[in-house]
Image (cartoon, rainbow, N blue to C red; front, side, top):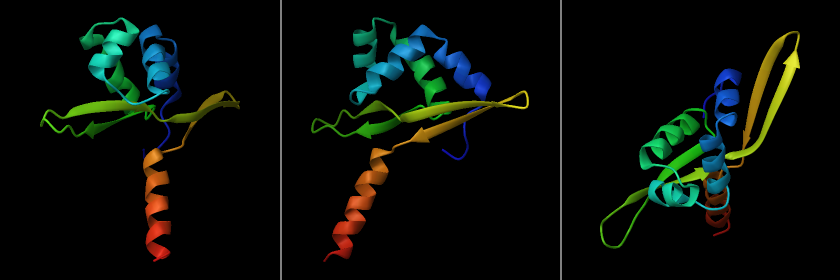
Length: 116
């Protein structure tokens, strides 16, 4: 994510029961929209709308999970490691800290390659 999300967007999402439920569910393991719909007891259209908003703010990331049968599915995973809100001189500043698993794997691959 290039920049931190706007405070208004983040506050609105965290005030939404559905968005919070999806964020909490995807913090345990990557899940498909269908799994989220079932686990969080919400319609698939609601899941997709909230996931779009969560992705726009960088709170959730989607990646394609390849299947042997050729039916690939997007899985969603929470990206928020920490969210900091500061109020300075009447202005809110939201900083999103992301611990990306992709970066962890990339770093491990680089370490492995350099060790050869």
